[in-house]
Length: 415
Length: 119
Image (cartoon, rainbow over the protein chains, first blue to last red):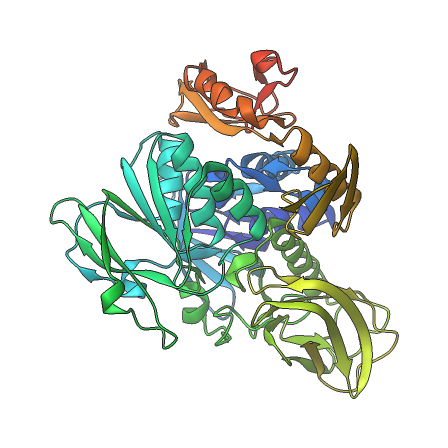
C-alpha cells in the first residue's frame, strides 16, 4: 500500500473542495491534495449547464460549468495535486484517509488537516415511500440532468415531476427544450420548494403547470413506467382518495430533497447535527474532531454555490491556522435557532471573535413578509437586517463583526 | 394605464416587481436593485432569456458540450436558436469561451463553450 503525506487533504472536488484547495494554496500551503471519485473535477456543477451561478462572487450569471472551470483552472495553475477516479473508503479520527483507485490501488493518505467536501445526495423513491411496482423510468432529477446534459441520452418521452425543488424546476425546462413532454410538477407542500425565479423562467415560460399540495401516490407499469396516480393531500398531510387521478407517462422525475453525504464523517466519529444532518461546525468550519474541517453541502444544503465556495475558503483558512497553530481555540459559544428559524450555521463560534467577521447562514421555517433577522447576544441586538420576504428555500446569509468578546450564546430570530 | 406583476429572475432574491405603463411612461417598484428595474422594463417591452444547452461533441468521452449565450436573446427566438444548436457538432478539445456559433440568427449574440474539454 502506498502512503502519501500532505499538509491538507480535501475529500471531494466539487465547488466546496475546489475553493478550499485554491484558498489553501493562496495562503501559502505547499502540499495540498484534492481527492475526487469522479473522473474529473467540478462535481455536480459539470451537469448544471443552466445559468445563475456566481452572481455574488463574480457579479455575472455563469453556468455551473463556467463557474467550475474558473476554479479548475486555478487548481491547475496552483499545481495542486489531484487524484481523480479515487474513492475514499475511510477517514480515521487521527486524520488518516484510506482511498482506492484503479491506478494506484489502495492508498493511505496522512494529512495535518482534512477538509470534508463530499457534498450531498438526492433523496430517492424509497425515502418518499411511493407505492406500486418498481419499473424502469423512476429517476432522480440529478440523474436525468446527467443523462441529458453530459451523457447525451433522453430518459423518456413524457414526464411527471414530483417535487418543486430547484433541480426539479430546472429539469422541467431542460426536458421541455429537449423534446420530452412535461405533464406537470407536483409538490406535496403547500408552497414552492425552489426559488421563485426558477418557477418563472422554468415553468411559467413554458406553460408547465405546478400543482401544490399534491403528491404521487402510486407508480404503474412493470418493465417501464406506464402511468402515475396523483392525489391532493389534506391538511393532515395524507392523500385524499377521492381526488386521485391517473396520468399516463413513461418517466417519473423525483426532486424531493438533498441529504448531506456523511458516511465518512459518521464513521470517523464526527458529531452530526440532527437538523442539518451535517457535521456540527464552528466559525472556522472545524468539526468536533480537531483538524477535521467541513465545507459546502456536506455541512448543510446551501442554495447558492457562492455560499458553498465561501464555506470552503473559511475551512481552508481554518485548516491553515490549525496547522500553523495560530488559532488557539478559546471559549466557544453556541448559536441558537430562535423564532421561526430552522437552523443556524455554524453551530458554534469563538467567543473571543471581536473584530473578526462572522458569517451566519440560516433558513426560516415558514414563508414570511416584512421581517427582521436579528442576532441577539445576552439580550443585546448585535445586528438587525430587514427583509421584504423570507422563504424557507431562500437561505439568509448574515455577516457581522462583533466589536468585543461574546458573553453568551448567539440567538438568531426572524420576525 | 396598464399594470403588470413580475418576479425578477436576475438573482436569487426573486423580487416581486410591479410595472406601470402610463401611456408609454414605465414606472417600476418593488425591485431592490437597478438590474430589477431593467429586467421588468425588458420583460414588458421585449423579454429576453439566456440560452443554455448542449451541442454534439466528437472525440471525447463525453457526448455533449455545454454552451451558453454571451448575453440574453429575445425570448421569441429561443426555440429557433435551440433548433440551430441541436444541429451543431464540434470536435474536442475545446476551451471554455471558444465561440461555437457566432451571431446566432443575427441577434448579435455569440454562443460560447461553457467548459474546457481536453479528453
